[in-house]
Every structure is written in C-alpha cells, then in structure tokens.
Image (cartoon, rainbow, N blue to C red):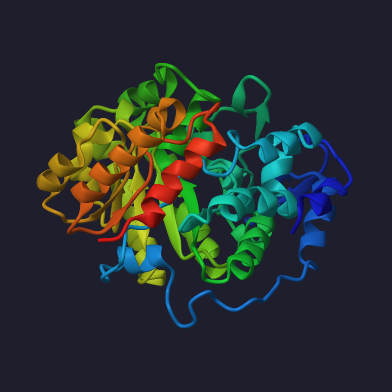
Length: 401
C-alpha cells in the first residue's frame, strides 16, 4: 500500500461521540464514528500482494531466536519504530492529525506500520496502535487530546462503574486491528515477524482510574489501599479482555506479542505482587492455554527492582530498560527467560555511527548464549535522525557470530 493511496482517502476527523455501536454483553453504549467504519470496511477489499516468503519454509529470524534455535545473528526491532521520528509519518500526521484516525483506520495503520519496514527491514514489524484501543469494546470511553494525551471521559472509581465494564469481543469491537494484522502478515510475507501487543491490567487501570496520564497515581493507589476489592474486580475484567485481545491478534496474523506494563514500576514490589503480577500471570496462562506456541514478551519501564518477578510471570522474553546491565540481569534470573533490549534511546538520538556501533556490538556480546532480541530500553525518541536509526539497524543486521 503506497502513501498515495492513503493520501487520497477522505479526511474525516474522529470524535468518540459521533456514532455508537453496542457492547458485546448487550445494550451498553460504546461510541464509534460512522465515517471510520466506512473507511475500515474499504480495507477488507484491499488485495495483498501474496508474494512468497523470502526464505521458503523458514520461520522469521525473530521467531527462531525466541524458540532458542541457532541463529546467525540476534534479531532486531525497535519500540516505537513506526511513528514520530520518521518524516513520512510526520507528513501523514499533517493530513490526519487525529491519532485515532491513524491507528484505527486500517489503511493508515497499515501504511504507518510498514513505513520503517520498507526503509530498514527490521526483524519485527509491530502493529501501529495503542494500548487503550480495546477499551471502548469494554464500555470504557476514551480519546486522545492534542497536547494532553489519553483522556478517559468517565474515570472508574466505584464498584458500580466496574460492573458496567463488559466482556471484550475483539472481532466486533476492534475489527480494524484484525484487518490491519491480516494485511501486514501478507505484505511482509515471512521476511519479518509480525508483532501484536496489549497493555497490562495495572497500567490500563491506571489510565482508567486516573482519567488519563498521571504524575503520582494518587487515585489508583487510593483505590488499592482503601478499596482493593474494587481495583481487583477491574483488574480481573481487564485481564480477561486482554487474553481475548491477544488471541484475536494471533488469529489475525500476529506471530509474537508484547505486554506493556508501563506504570507497574510505580508500585512497591510488595504492591506489584498484589496488583500487577497475578494479572500478568493470568494473561500469560490464558493465552498459552489457547496459543501455546505464541511467544510473549513483557516490558516494564523502570522494572529493575522487580526483574525476578517479571521472569516468574511465564513469559518467554523479558524486555530490559536501560537501567539494567544485561550481564547482571541474566545472572539475576539465571537465563530463566530470554531477554530483549536494552540500548539507550538517547544514544540513537545523540550518538554518532562509531558510538552506536560500539554499543550495539557490546550489547550483542552480553546477550550471547541466551535468547536475545536487540532493542532499545524504551521507545525511540522524537528528533532522532533516520540516519542514526539506519546505523542502529544495519549494525545489528551486518553482525555475524
């Protein structure tokens, strides 16, 4: 799909109050724009190229590495590789300023997901979306406001509100996610692995209870300390929803998935064990029961203090941020899982070709002997040059054991 195809689509601003669909449990209002529905439907008629896999009969490098097979080099992809640092994405944003348009209209999400793949050919292509995307299918309205980020229209703070949260039916609530993944799977045709993702229950609950982003997370912690039964009820529903969501992504073509628990590091380890860990385990167990061969990665920014607990969730890969030394991390978890990471995003922003090459080679050597996916310790930073991103990818791709 070319940028020209996307650019010729009718521009329709998204507002979550324009139109409605129904929650899977019946009768509960869930906003959805009619214009978006029309544009999504067009994606189902788009014919994929159907080209043969680059290496017939051979799984993508990332999947072989995660399975523990012998590989010629570690695979590489980059968190937030599709998006804000690329000029092609910035141009698309001028035509489609709403994040929900870009992430929920298949033509746009497909184009954005493929932008870095067409330029750099990373070993993983990740769906361009957001962790909040499935929430409306659970009767939780949200939007993204310019300069403010995600906003939950009606923060959930009582058991009565939790009871109105309904079961997620991904095929009905977020069909555009499935359509996007199906097209991407055909387009990349086995040259790279297709990645899906979801938010962990505690991080999703943080947005839902706070009403958006927060500095101190006062409301959700007040709920945890004074109304734990309310928070647990919400977390359990979110965990069930994310099991269905990840399995739907796998059914639509995702070959590996990542769970983001962005705000779990704001919990004390003892509170992490109560309000986050059990629900991550619930997701992993539920997904593995239905999709036993689907690799699962867990990423927690600032998770150095809970690394051993992360490795006990049952995931295949623990993604490390920049605060952790790979050698130390491997020793702490005794290679119980594979690892992903953990190059400083600021190195890609501010470094030169020599410094990027040296750090990449050091990181690869530290990961030698275990299942290792080279990645950043966090998402690529705005303002990073595409040239430096190219140096990063090429250094890994040119490496051989």
